[in-house]
Length: 82
Image (tube, rainbow, N blue to C red; front, side):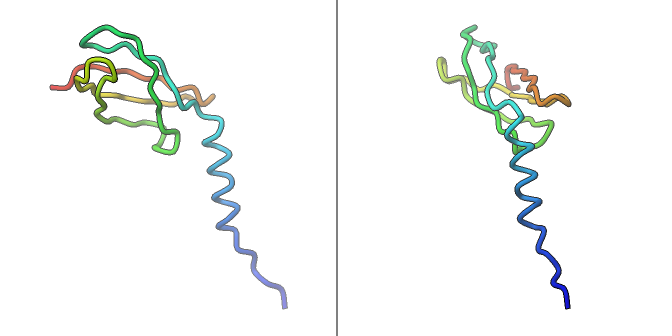
């Protein structure tokens, strides 16, 4: 009698391999103070993301939008929160 292989570990390995080719950092300009800073983005968060993060220089909040293209490059936009 043959055993059925547990493929759940394989699925996890594929996801990790895909995440490793996606960019995890981006340079952005604060819409408040104008400083250019490097921020981390989470490839595991999906191909499109939106969240609020504070500027590490002036501490004012931004709305961060992230989109990944088919090559794994991150496009990141920040603007003032309303």
